[in-house]
Image 1 (spheres, one colour):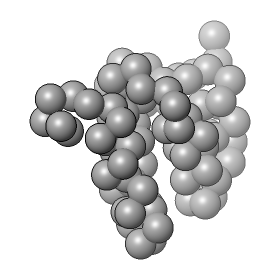
Image 2 (cartoon, one colour; image 1 turned 120 degrees about the vertical axis):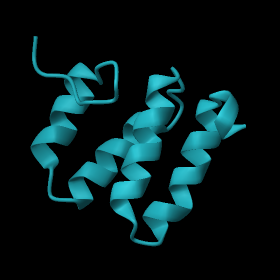
Image 3 (cartoon, one colour; image 1 turned 45 degrees about the vertical axis):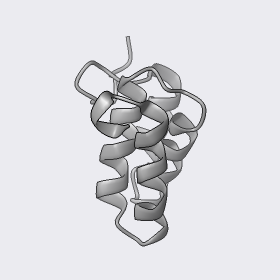
Image 4 (tube, rainbow, N blue to C red; image 1 turned 180 degrees about the horizontal axis):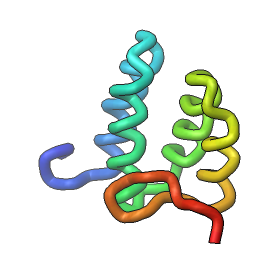
Length: 77
């Protein structure tokens, strides 16, 4: 399903990674899930991951402004 662009499958792939301490890999999957338009949990999970990685300001910016095409956290508008 991941290969077909299923955001739910991408978010599901991220969960065991962040639980196993592989935060950067999990971040990538959460960002991919958001890019597909899947928004059930990835915004919350990605904000949590960024906070765990010491990137609280980016987590706040993600919450306020979302992501850009390509998965980068958006800058304030």
